[in-house]
Structure formats: C-alpha cells, structure tokens
Length: 340
Image 1 (tube, one colour):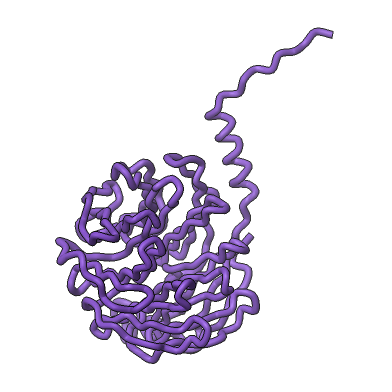
Image 2: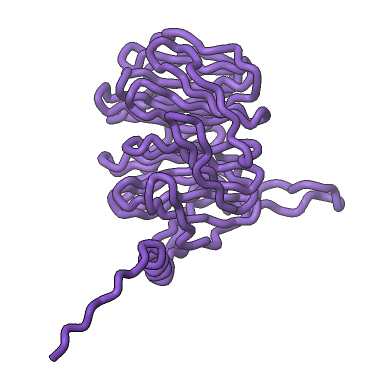
C-alpha cells in the first residue's frame, strides 16, 4: 500500500481553525445575580481569589462578598465616594481609594475594620499594590499625580508629578515598573516604581481616551480599554501598540486571567463584555462578546473558577423629560455573574 504524504498545514490556517473552535466552544452568559443593598453609585471591583472575597466600591462603602457562598459578608468604611480596594496579603492589609477630597483607607483583611486613613492627592481613582516594592499606588486626578505609600507602614513615600494630563488607571509588571495612562492626552507612562520618576511617555493611538488597564507580566504586554471603542495591547518595553480591536462603548475595566490567557473588557455604555484570547504576545482574538447590562462598566475575575463579576444598577428615566438619567431604581443594585 503506498504511503500517503500529509501536506503541511500553514500555521496561519491552523491558528484560524483553533480560534474558530475556541469561539464556538465559548458560551459565556449571565448565570446568576447577587443582590446588594444601597441605592447609590458604584465604581471598581476586585477579587482576592485566595481569600475567596470580592470587593466592590459602592460609593459610601466597600462591600465584601464571599465568592463561594455569593453572600455579603461585610462592609468597610462609612465615607463618601469610595472607588475600589486592593490587598496586600503579606501585611494583612487592604487599601481603599476615597475622594474626600483624597485619602487611602487602610483596613485589616481579617476583621475588615479600618485601621488608618492617610491623606493623598485630591480625587484618587486608581488603587493598586506593587508587591515587588511593597508599595501602594494611587492616581490622584485632582492633583494629576501618582502617590506611593509603604504597604507595611501606610506612610506616604513620595509622588510622581504633577503630570500634564488626567491620570486614570494603571498596572504594575512586578519588576519595578508601574504603567499609568493620561486619559485626556492619549498617553501611556512607564514609571520607575522605586525611584518614582517617569521613564517613558508613549502615544497609544489609535486608542483614544485610555481608561482601564491590566497586563500580562510574563510577556510585558499592557492591556488598555479605550473610551474610543478600542481594546489595545501595548509592548511595555517599546511602547508599540501591537494590537487594536473593537469593543463596546463606555469601558471602565479590563482584567487579564493568565491561567486561561483571557482578557475581559467591560463596556457599560452598551452593556457588553468583550472576551479576548491572547494567542501570542502580539496576537489577540475575540472569542465572545457577551450581553450583560447597560451600566455594567467595571468587573473583577475569580481566578479560581474563571467567573466574572460585574456590579450594576438600574436607573429610572430623568424626570420631566430632562436629558440624562433619573434616580436608581430602588433595590436594583446587584452583581451580574458571567460564566460558561
């Protein structure tokens, strides 16, 4: 019997077939909702997967939800305009950015009780921990600066700025660098996390109004959700935009799951969750665009289960035919849980 030679399949066709199969296999959808009390606004969500906790910035407080039972297990603070929380488990400390006009609330991870409040710049939005330097960073929009705190002592170490633009969100490569966007300028800054100085300033066009940010620390690729309706991947060494793909409107959160190589992008303007697969360091593909709810603009990922949590509330029409939205519908605030 003659031997039949197999023809080599071009790599591009193989990858295309693989991505099609991934796209067909993906079946993400809203699987449940978690009711949260309080008929007022919200901002960032984050998870502590190891401790099985979800933190939700809910205006006056940060709400804590158990990721397994899906029950509210506590609230932190009693302030005004609390944006979000970040944790440093090595010090048993959590940190909340609060605009009052600008402080970081430090809390005990076990008791959820505040232990200190540290003034920073006005209107801090970003809150994150860089574990490589044991520092907490806030992006203070009012003072247009980045503030660094010692995660163990809570003391302010220093600032970067004032900067020439509106600071919005950032991420860390855990190798001594912090990345921060200047939203109104369309710029990405690479900052020395120890020396607290700007190393590089890059344009991220065609990404306009860069907002949310995360990164793949292994490949040094920065992922940005852009209010211009683009998801951008940027080389964190060179500043080159290696990929730009369409997303929905009103993005305010991006999160990368390194185990699954998935990037989740929440767009509240049209109520969609775009899920991209990282095929390689410079190649990305949309595997599914999930319908969530209008207003679901922030998210957090449970890195154990792969579930995505999106806080959202519903609003009544503006009174007397006015433009904009009216008050939040009573009892409507909840977390939509998206999974396969």
